[in-house]
Image (tube, rainbow, N blue to C red; front, side):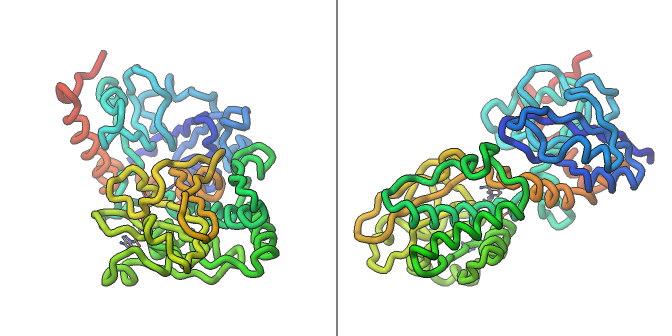
Length: 387
Ligand SMILES: NC(=O)c1ccc[n+]([C@@H]2O[C@H](COP(=O)([O-])OP(=O)(O)OC[C@H]3O[C@@H](n4cnc5c(N)ncnc54)[C@H](O)[C@@H]3O)[C@@H](O)[C@H]2O)c1
């Protein structure tokens, strides 16, 4: 089987700096025999990829023009992370990215129909599965990592700003960039935050992480341990299966980081009534799971998603306890683009290495089958290929 040429798109989505291929994985693909082309990234810092063009060049990849995938030969495999820019033109290539059109999201028909109309194929990253049915690559670990980081920041901010001022957007912490260059920069900053909070509170924060054995939960636990806040209740199914919430242990922790995968209705972990407890220490909830609009949201104390420029929403609570802020950002890994891209791309690498055998490799066969099934659900059936 011959090696297809892999063509990494320059994405240019505002404030998104992650990428599906990294210099590390590009080199491994090149070493395995794949030709790898990488589009030059936009230079505007709001739109640019975290990995510089020169890093890809040094890894051996060939730099090509931004958006050159559109006119590239039909047999290229076009790799990206986020959805394609909105358009109506038919798509003739094989694409690998998160297209957000398989769950009937708004406008899904137009997005999906472009592939069969051009004779193209979509391998949606969200649905790539191994033989056990587990996703091959996800961003969960860094979602939990960044979520716990923002929880620490908020705890420290509340203590050092007792007038009730909300935590400012994270770009104000990193000279206007809106993300952290790397984990070292983030951890160094958080250690200062912990020290500033500890000076006022006389102690470090205690935390409860729910879903601690999952991807997001393990990231949250690692962050808290790395910044020197090891007093963590690490809960998963064994701790909740025989006892219904609300749980007093949550109210009695300073930080609550929710990282569960909600698959069925469950009693709330915390609700407005339980917050009235005189034992409440809880002052920050980071809802990494972000089931904000789900009718079974197990944290029914807030109802909006927050953003990096306005990371918290305040909860009005009766009683004399501390103020309570909730963080509910649904794209947390974007704030740590280098490490989250590296981890995602590394997990995806075995599948990418199997692209030359994609007509037989189970991961790509499964993705193609799903693409065909979803195309059949388009209103009017699979559209004919336009010539
Ligand atoms: N906010 C973001 O930016 C962001 C990014 C990625 C993922 N997510 C979301 O985070 C959630 C978790 O994702 P993941 O990849 O970590 O999932 P995962 O399956 O790896 O982990 C979920 C964990 O939750 C546990 N769990 C489920 N129900 C529980 C309950 N009732 N009590 C205790 N533990 C319970 C499971 O046992 C598992 O260990 C998903 O909803 C996902 O969509 C959010």
